Length: 97
Image (cartoon, rainbow, N blue to C red; front, side, top):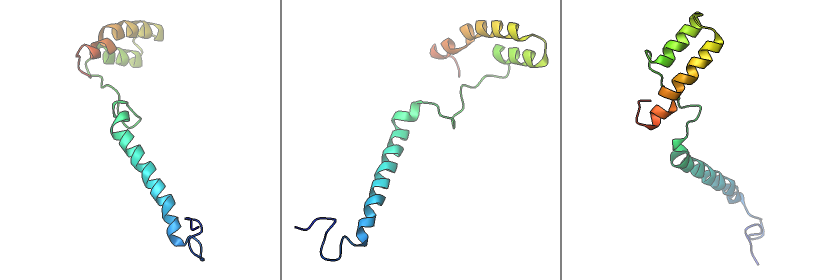
């Protein structure tokens, strides 16, 4: 009985080296397919997050904190209020991202 591993008297021959290449091509194809379809909606490290406008209230608050006009506690208090109004909820209601 001849099988792939014992084909003929000389063994499988050099063509057996193509099997790892075929499996590598299958794996690359599956990963590429998943990246283009299923994983497309998720943000990865290569995609930037939502962009904050230069004159948005959150950006102004960040500049005031960086300039030392407000302390850290006040920054976090105001940021939590701004996130409730202009944060993620505004994006789901059709706000610009």
